[in-house]
Image 1 (spheres, rainbow, N blue to C red):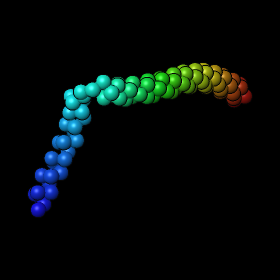
Image 2 (cartoon, helix red, strand yellow):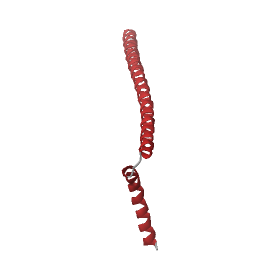
Image 3 (tube, helix red, strand yellow):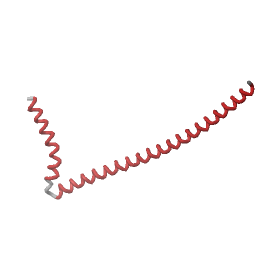
Image 4 (spheres, helix red, strand yellow):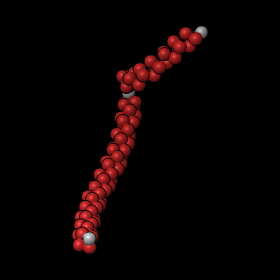
Length: 101
């Protein structure tokens, strides 16, 4: 009975894949063709809407990434300036210390 149930499940899975193809192959009337076309157009519109949302999200992410890169470059420049300043201060301190010694 387990084997029978397994075979029945496999048949149902195979039928579900073939049904959609058979539905398109068995369109015989203009009404069926119109319904099928309406469905396809609705799916196309849905995917176009989703594509535009994803494109907008991508553009926002790219702009955000660009802003972050600019901020990172500015912070690196600021850190380099601070490092130079501190190195100069260290040199001055060392010179003053040497003079005192």
